[in-house]
Length: 335
Length: 195
Image 1 (cartoon, rainbow over the protein chains, first blue to last red):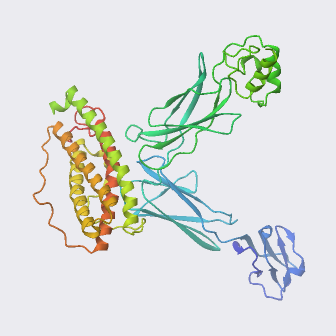
Image 2 (cartoon, rainbow over the protein chains, first blue to last red; image 1 turned 60 degrees about the vertical axis):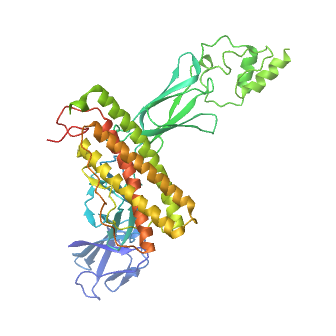
Image 3 (cartoon, each protein chain N blue to C red; image 1 turned 30 degrees about the vertical axis):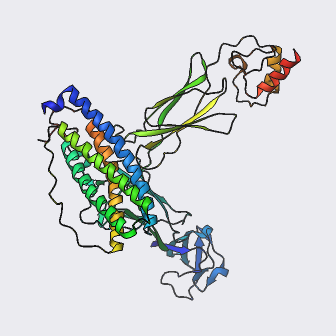
């Protein structure tokens, strides 16, 4: 009958052919393929310095009859390294969850055991079906100064390891990012963008536990972000957008009183309203092809480089970004 | 309860709550700063666990969401009255220990004590609005605890400030609950009395 055998990477493995004598004539196979006699010591199979590729089914057959005498499944792996554990409350004040993973795979099955202690009290962390390496726990007390201590032990056939996390209730509060972020141009306003979003759906009670928000935005062609912190409300109007430039916008959330900021929301793109394009002058056309801007510009009919007020060739300095210098140069030529 | 339901009372309650929320928010920020200064000045380890000390009101609460408005007000009032006495004692001990040497910490403690007193009064106002009798304060408070060693005093001070910081957050949450418009009579949240 068959069984499983776990060995460490680099170990020397000796397999006996069941109850056969040492001097019996046997044939060993690995995954159905005969193993060369050089690996045998009598009827014992010797595998030195095993590696992962040597995992598989090993069978031993009696020499003449080819009766199967012994079979084992060899699994080569490693004992677990110290696991990585994190705990977080994205649904405060209902509870929190802890999730974990191993920094490097062991290649063999592992089992995890998690214990949560609040002061002297043991708490139960209920394992989630999905994802697997996660459990959740209900907060029975709020506003406690007593720390939580979470210990995760990982065990496999070759060894065990553990890690401990100690934290207080407030420190792990981190909401999910805001949802449904929408950015729209404002009609007749070339420098405005209206942004709105919703509280993350995982946050159970935004009325009693309001969130504050952090908005960041920049034109695609610049690296520098602009930031706005908003203590309430789920919308904001950007009023200093560069005309005609496509923007990237993100929002983050935080409980007003405790914890840390969420990750940034999914990024949305928007371009401020621009006027219906007039017939482009020659100078503007040249400017467009020689300016340093990227291909992120939209198709010419809906894109203008300069604000409505700028007039090419008048000698006035155009209030344009990047293209301004070139336009001004051309303007100077025509004075 | 008639007074609590009138529109003007509801407005006054909302007003008191929002001012109370701002007070508690500022108080918390100051307590957190004071905590940092206190830990440093007293040579303590910020991560030291301090066992619950007798007389220090714990902010920790179970079933917080099920509390009635009256419960919230009464528990807050009892807590801040206790903190008022504890901070006064800490100030006294400060002066004894360091005299003039640590005026900064003393001033910060006094400022927080002032805010705690103001907040206590605020809570009393809210209770008055609900036609609630304000529980009288005990004559001399609890019996004077045995004289603590200097180190024990410092640890207790740490415990006091930590719990006060938690209470300040809890109070903000409590006041937000209170500020919610009253649901149908008999329901738990807001100021409806539990049956």
